[in-house]
Image (tube, rainbow, N blue to C red; front, side, top):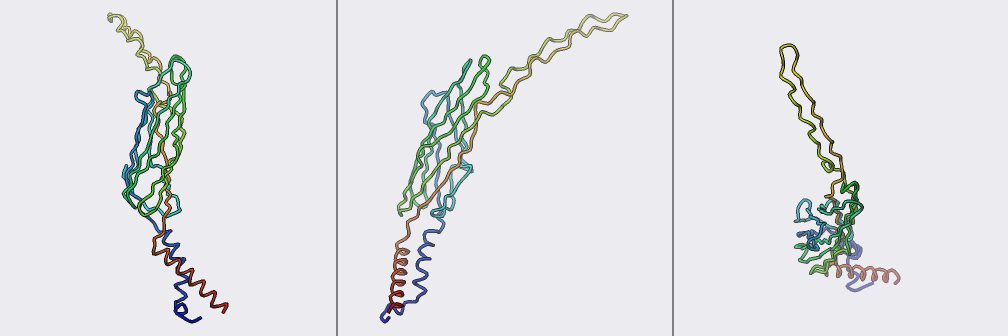
Amino acid sequence: MTGRYARWPLAVFLCAPLAFAGSLAHATIIAGTATFTDLGPSGNDLNFSGVFHPSANFSFDVTSGSPYVLTNFLTITSHDSDFAWWGSVTATDTLSVTFAFTQPGTGTGTISGSGTETETYVFLGHLDGGSGAIQWNAPAVVQFGNGDKLKIDLGNTPFTLDADPGQGDNPGQGDNPNSGGNPNQDGNPNQGWTPDQGWNPDQGPNPNQSVDIPATFTLTAIPEPASIALFGAGLLGLGMAARRRRN
């Protein structure tokens, strides 16, 4: 084959697809802040608080197409003031996490969800056990100005009410010892009664529980125009080379 295409180095044709793939696989810095909000309703007996790790400000590298998982992204703690003399009681609260990104571009996304806790009471209001769960709705998808898309998933997390001392009866003091009679010249003094210790506290459940919420970030990068052009040139060159071999 003659002409200008015959003078193109074959290496350009072969390397163009690799360069295109490399443009998609490079790491991208994801940075921004996260905010946890308890949405109520107002006066609800069940409320939640959230703490991000290591802080609400985050920054990490993500490779396009490869999920990036933070196993302990957010710790949520339940605060339940429900009470019943007998039986079970269930309360539900609504939650949200909002992301505000600064890299690779500006953008926001919110994931809403709910927190539920069920407590079981026996013996005149004694908390005997319970369970709960944090459940999230659809993941958030943020599209940046360069066309890249970032999907954020938060993990659903069940929990049980762990044991915690101090929920049972407080120990009593029993009877105070008396001094008995005054000693006389012939006998020893009477020591009276020895105090008892009353009831020991049991290990009943703790109605306030903390659970770790994982987060998964998946980036879908849009290739840069220069990479697309290089990839097209590579395909064109490979086609020309195949035609040359046939001729």
